[in-house]
Amino acid sequence: MKTVFAMIGLLLLATSSYAIDPSESFDDPELQARYEKIIEEVRCLKCQNQTIKDSNAFLAADLRREIRRMLEEGMTDAEIFDFLVERYGDFALYRPRASGKTLILWIAPALFLFGGAFVMWRILRRRMAMPIDDEPAEGA
Amino acid sequence: MSRYLVPLIAFAILIPVFVIGLGKDPSRLPSPLLQKPAPQFELPSVTDPSKTVGSASFENQMAVINVWATWCVGCRQEHGFLMQLAQSGTIPIYGLNWRDNQAEAQRFLQQLGNPYVDSAFDEDGRVGIDWGVYGAPETFLVAADGTVLFKQLGPLNPSLWEQNFVPLIEAARNTQ
Image (cartoon, rainbow over all chains, first blue to last red; front, side, top):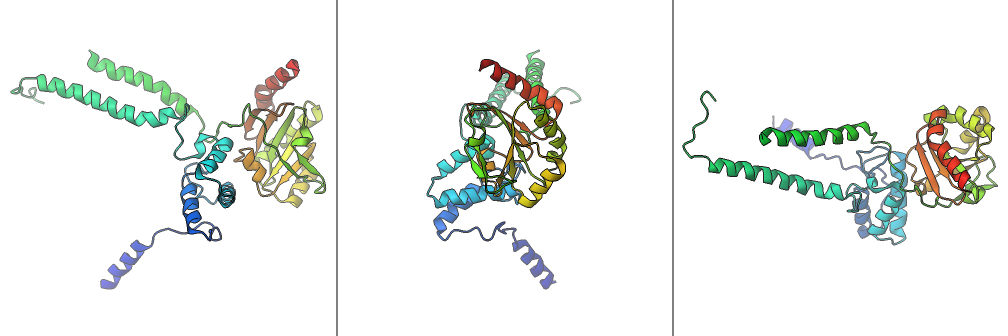
């Protein structure tokens, strides 16, 4: 029994942290960390619900190669994101920057939150105004 | 009354939002290149690697840039139409052979016919990235001054051509 539990435990420890291109690593750990972070933020346009980190579509591989080149050339993260948005549009980024076109994406959650809070406040206020001994309707 | 009216109004507002949203194909992305200068490039020709094809090839003339590859099923679908279009002489068609094998690309053109004035060989897809290509076939219409006027995703056919390209080409020619 112990062995079975040990085996299950070991299986649970195995996470899927394989690299798509094992050759793609920088000597500089700082660049590598920036690279890993950027490719997690970029959508694979061909396979839209994957990042280019997860995808092995050749377009994703090409974009990773371009991002590596730009990092090696010393471009900043913002410049790299600009490069992608200029070519593929805001949709290429998983966290689109706040511009006129994407503003609704950024304010919608707050609108829904405040809208919901407002509706709840009105319902509560009405209920508070009701007599305390108000019994539920018969048969309810 | 407002108890029913408010949710009803909210519902009435949401319905068109969903209808429009669901009617859109999320795999068809608008190109940020539209109305901007076409990206410059220069690549070896597919048919003759000693020659180059690039922005200079269609400088000062309106042209169609078609992104194609031998592995792309849609490209075979639209090939017949591209041949017709080339024969009609309406507008020069240039090819961007994207992420392909040169020998296979040459064979493709020999077997099915070559509608292109010339095709640029973009082996590693770098020019494709500059043009925002994410899936062949894609077809761009570039004005004589180098502005991108239109981008068609997926295989071309006569009705898409009539609908999307012809009005723009005529408008551009009339203002010249």
